[in-house]
Amino acid sequence: MPELMRHAILGAGGVGGLIGACLAHAGDSVTLVVRREALAQYPRQLRLESAFGNFDVEVACAAEVPPVDALWITVKATQLEPALAALKNPAAARAIVPLLNGIDHISMLRARYGSGRVIPATIAVETERVSPGHIIHRSPFARLNVLSAGRDLLGRTVDQLQEIGFDCRFVDDEPTLMWSKLVFLAAFALTTTAADKTTGEILADPDWRQLGLACLREACAVAVAEGAKVDADAVIAGVMKMPGNMRSSMQKDVARGRTPELDAIAGPILRGARRHGIDVPATRKLVAAVEQKVGCAETLLA
Image 1: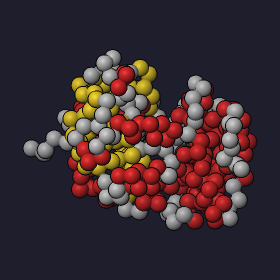
Image 2 (image 1 turned 180 degrees about the vertical axis):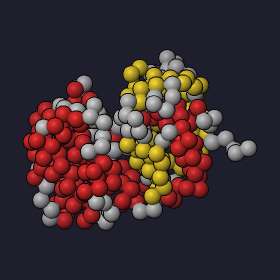
Image 3 (image 1 turned 30 degrees about the horizontal axis):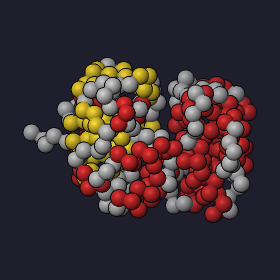
Image 4 (image 1 turned 30 degrees about the vertical axis):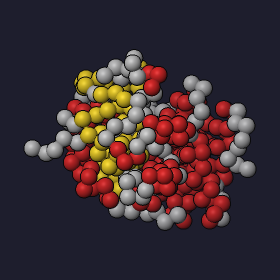
């Protein structure tokens, strides 16, 4: 019988709740790491509503990261620094698996905790925590990609998620792993947020569609310059197959008055474009529109 894996979830929101619920459902040990002031009231179970199935699972809760095989970091990029205060003893986690949007967090985590402990990964999904412990998985898919360096430790975990319904892959090349998500996410998040429209509404509007696809092609040009193997036409073909009712997490954050992950998602493209002398007018136009919506005191476009 395979050895029980111990997982901790730092960030019990939509993504963290989905991962935690599915791993607990598969029989592994899962601890949700929550704010100390919320610990007494937080339910010791997760309820998942998903195309993969509806179920309730028992989990543990803690204010600090306990000894685990894998620490999944699923907070917003804007919340990463304060959230890491819960990792009092970095040696408690055999591996740290960040599922944040963006790219820059990888180098920060490696500098702090060691390059061998951090296993880069990405997830593409629409999911939402509607109340503490209650997760609704809204997209018909959940795509998890993990750097191949994590295969030995996470191979069984990836197989478990695949059996539940995830589309999982190990990816050998780190720039390709990280940029493959970002080139799609930037166009999706920036366009849906600037327009406050769903994916279907964006694609049905010639002007917004053109702007969004131009942003995607710009992001791909920067990604290639950064060493990633991405193909703009292939990414666009995937975009055309997306469900028409999807909304980005950035769009939802702005609608709720929360700080969007603008630097994490658009920053690498803008900074990479400057490094490589690539013109990104569509990206800059969308960033300006989002900044205007949220009233940013500082701009990424300076």
